[in-house]
Amino acid sequence: MQIILYFGSFNPVHNGHIALADAVSKRYHAKVWFVLSPQNPFKQDRTLWDENLRARLLKQSLRPYDALAYCDAELNLPKPSYTIDTLRYLQERHPQTEFLLLMGEDNLSGLHRWKEIDRIMNLCRILVYPRKAQKETAPQPDTYPIMERFAHKISILEDLPLLDISSTEIRQKLSEGQDISSLVPWQASGADGFQYFNNEKTS
Image (cartoon, rainbow, N blue to C red):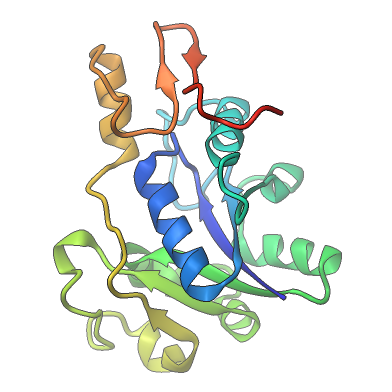
């Protein structure tokens, strides 16, 4: 069985995340697990929402999708979160599963700095979705040297729904009291709480 792991802080999750994961799941006929990262070792983000809130929004947002699921593996591991440690944790619990990693093109430039990157590449195939501005041009090895070493393990995904949405934009709009209902699968109401759309499945 194959499982596609989609790592991220999801700060917060938005329609772009969901559309991408849904399309990749259908293309590969595999489940996509949203692996919530409580702390990225390469980022010190002071705007990071509480991990319990991000988890709650993720779980609510994924309920309508049978092939998309929330994964709390990194919440059970030491911080900061390292992908290789999470992979070992998951493989111990799911030894018959082949894991693939889904990531954005922006990760390719720093992939060589990841902890035990050679081990990660030996364990997994990498599925890369290009930046919106470059979606007509696949990333080249001379731009991302990691592709020279592991080209056979990296697949560039084409013709995917790349929505021009960012979590930063959503946080900014929320702080300004703007409507974000078209950008997210949940709805903020007031400064102190969150409401969700009524079309979610009951728990």
